[in-house]
Image (tube, rainbow over the protein chains, first blue to last red):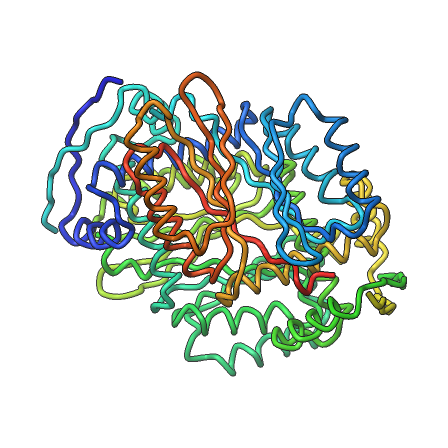
Length: 137
Length: 137
Length: 137
Length: 137
């Protein structure tokens, strides 16, 4: 990984505010904080352009509804080529959180996510999209 | 306005991607694009911390509902100390867009916005918060 | 405007929580609150599908930079067919807020917004998209 | 779980648009779609009020940086009372995605997330907050 170094000019008042923020957020230095801002904006771009991205579908449900588990498994098999893995957490006696990790075109992952979230018995669901990290060195 | 200049190190692959993005977004140079990312993150902080901010409340409604106009005027007068101005646009024969600019603590503006948006007859409304720009030089 | 009435079934615990929320947000009744949720989700769809929408571009800048005002006017004239109106507010001795209202395809408004926000001297800018309200009766 | 049934009035044009949307999103009926909208808005409220919530911290990193793995483990142990589990996915030869599930006050999870994301070597990270699902029956 080859580093490129260049100069940035900022008004004093702005850099003083930024320094306070990055200290509070525990960044080791300005470069690391600026790299993070840049990566964040590049990831947003990647998602908007329907490239191959990573999706984490988070769903909350009551595991007592046995048919639901079957229905969720069925949907996941229909889209098995998109799905990487799923993690299941028992939140309390009734409630489960499942995080289904997937990889594919942003649009396809959105479709899969909508089908899962619309399943009767899923209390709440949300999709989170991020990058594969390929160029974010 | 005093400028501070400092060096930033970025991996080559990352800066190449970033350069493409800022060209597409018409930034004159890297410094300007990085300043924007920094200001954007500072504005988010300001809003989260309930400081004095600027709010733009956007509402869509049908101006034929005369009582609605009265009710909206009434709410705005109740909160007149928060409100700067409002702009009204006739979108078509029936629909109006009104943008109500306000200044105050983020929490107070949210309360005002919720009251306006909840008014019967307002088809759709959303609040947009931004900074007063004081330290964003 | 013809009203359609239909029944909705909700678990008691959910409707109790919802009733508290809509009371706090000053909705007159459940129907109005549910209408708002539905309109909100329809507006999001409209924006995602690159239909004709309304854009409010909010920018913060220091009006002492005279060239900036010229540059902003120039960009707005390049895209005059998209722009409806602009409202200017003097926030303090130095800072101005300008809200530029526009109407067009979501993608075109985003391009215009990016050009305006990338202009050197604009401290901060954000785009807010909403519906024309045509079908949100 | 006791169901409550009540009537909702919507303009015909609005319900027609909504019916198309819920069909496209595979909801079995209007009640299920409206329940989802209500749960979604309640979850947002819960997060804003700093209640006990579930956080999923998503990070991208290059697993070749051995010190990074140690540093990430260290941070997670400092906050072990918040953390439920973590799932690790090998995206390609270099890149890993780790999803760290946590439970706690929204503010505490944000602090943990900021510390993890600010760690040198983490390419990109984002926090996703959701509900424990307790009252979302």
